[in-house]
Length: 214
Image: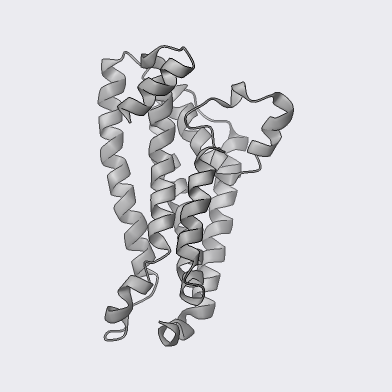
């Protein structure tokens, strides 16, 4: 990530100390979301042998996948804070809201993972499709660039991407050291609830049928 930050700070001709924190504060939540969703697509399928022997709630396996990535994210955050301190970044009260951002993001990702983990059982090629989609999405979310470089009349298209709001949430809290607006929190919370409820609904709808599809 240091190399990535150095390369893009050089391309944009901005100080590494400033742009490095920007990239890290966006890249870490992006990795949390993308790694969880990509890995989560196969979470139930990989548990096939276990599920056929012992009854286990199917939600456990997507939950473990997302929880593992959340732990990795938390450890990486610790490294980010050390780097931020060494680079003289602003440390503000906005960090008190970081746990809430993590929880909301966790719920959003869990909901999506529940959907794709069930869908992959019926459509095995979905795993490869999800990988390709997230490779493309990486460049459509302002992680290695700021949305301010995008012409204003095109920014609306970026904001149609739900992942944008979660990345921006962490940018504001960590990089900009400001508390996101109530509207921003509302959008993220709304997206999380919709994703989670949809995921739980689909899992509950197909749970009894899954074992026969594995």
